[in-house]
Length: 167
Image (cartoon, rainbow, N blue to C red; front, top):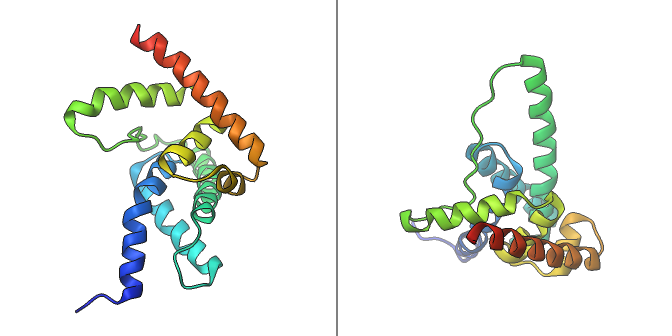
């Protein structure tokens, strides 16, 4: 069975942007499975909301991932309190790396974890998501200048942290 042009376009779009969506979702969830589910649900929701039949705007998908992650986190917190049971161990892996890159990825991950959430999410959306500041502003519901400032301050802090780690 041959793939239609529309299916091929969607497949290419997912191949191009899926890793960025998953990276962003991993930062916002407590497990790899939750991140994968979140991306799938967010892409479907964004596509339904877009109604064009084309792959949705990246900013819309990232905004949907963010909103759904907040909802998921709140639901999990309520469930944890109710059940007071041990939670599944969190997956801190932001990067799928080869063995020789693991140490470098761990250093960057540790440095990113030290940033405020607002800076971390802008850096992720800009560098790994490939969004413009206008798209980031739309995704996060902040002014474009705020997104740019968070990016600049976040990079400055990352440089400071990395200098301390690498000394």
